[in-house]
Figure 1: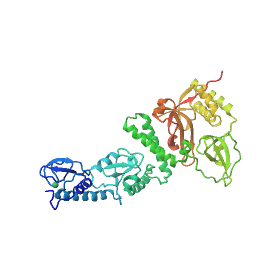
Figure 2: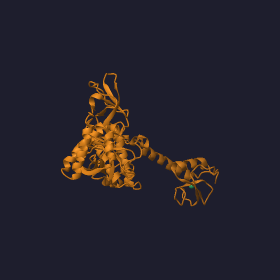
Figure 3: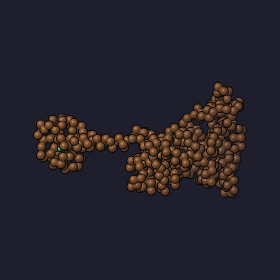
Figure 4: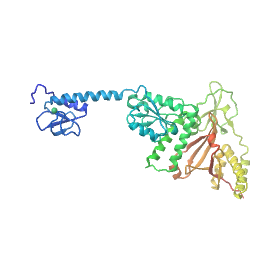
Length: 445
Ligand SMILES: [Zn+2]
């Protein structure tokens, strides 16, 4: 039988078996090399299987069963056509709207009208995603019940979903939300999209800190959202980038210089943070720039030099207000008076503030978020956070921000190891009452 004129070379059938993803097999009836499906009990030519073998090319000299050879050829060809169809770029994805990400998930599993690459919009949860074969995946930072992607959408399956991503970005724009930065690397978001990302970052930060548990997938997901939001903000939010100090400022020089800065001067930068002058320089167009001690450059005409002549006064005012607070009278006014004095000290003389903080004496007060000052210990997300600096950025939409750092190791574990920045649009921050432990220096008797 091995000399049958229709029998093919064993190497051909082995190669085809690999392409068709079937096994080679021996039958009980002859010595041919047959093929069989993975869990099949008969060969493709319907003979009983004696033993199945791997489909990897094996040095078996037996001739191929002609029937199996024809069958496996057809299977390999069909499979390759299907594979090519599966890999073809998505051309005109449809957009489907859902009430919730759970609905979206469920419906993609049974509704044949939702095709591979179609875009999924869930306005109520501010989530936009697409269907990747059987997997509904979000492209926004918020993802609800949808899956997320480890890789940028543009790199998936040789760019198959580029058009889905483009339509998703359009839909996200309608909702004033932004796609995750790795999914839309060349997009310049609108101010409203940036605002929304700040909110998404805050939401994620609350989830991250409310119940820290590295084993919990929900916690890990929140951590991933926070990272994605932070990546986005560092790229698209100038004040956030400045505050996290990753890259130099990109503000452009336009107005007249003012020659009034010396090394060691304290100044208020455009993002509301306080810096110390390291040096000054003129750009080629003659504008004066102030370089801070972190190496960032600021246009002098947009900075405000801090008058440091009232440090002694502020120190006294802080002690006086703290005394009133301790006595329990007029606490609202005293808390603000104390806050003003501390804020001034943080700006004008951080060493003086550190000295007051070192006494360890603090009073817990409830204040508006906008009244938080450097030196406060802010209660947020179930953690206690040192406020290292805080301000309101006016470089675009007014934004309250604070650079904070967990007080204890546990607080840092619950949030971040390194100092980090929390931010919120001023319109939200102004209605927000927070608890802080405020430095309350005792009178120096
Ligand atoms: Zn056969």
